[in-house]
Amino acid sequence: MDEKLYEAMNAQVTKELFSAYLYLSMAAYFEQKALGGMAGWMKVQAKEEVEHGMKFFNYINDRGDAVKLGAFEKPKSDFKSIKEVFQQSLKHEQGVTASINKIYDIALKVNDHAVVAFLQWFVDEQVEEEKNVNDILAKLEYVKEDSAAILMLDRALGERKED
Ligand code: FEO
Image (cartoon, rainbow, N blue to C red):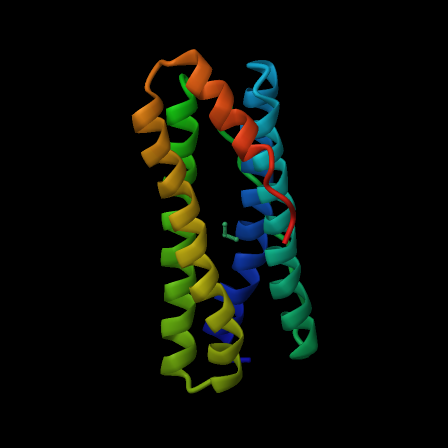
């Protein structure tokens, strides 16, 4: 693989795995608030992020390159509200989308059509990821501080299953 493309692909393994770590930190916050549904939603998200990381991990290996894992920063844990958690989640996903788009641009530039094809799944997935969090943020706007509504939303989010 082209060196610059390899570096970006390799860095994405750590970025995706860090996403899992961040979502686990968010799950821990919800567990502390006795919001088991939201915690469950975050745990499913964390598992999906591990799968995303593994897709990059396996693909890099399939192409004959060596994966080199990077370090994680400490994930944020001092959230002030339910809304802040999902706002941070959206911000994080927007960053991941930008990162995927950047790798896509490099792959196009170096004419690596196989990587372009591989990345298409992630381009589509990021639309879904951002939509999911935007939907939750929109619902939180309706809910505001209504405890009963928060518990209903918690129950609904707890129904999320792994893909
Ligand atoms: Fe793997 Fe949420 O992006």
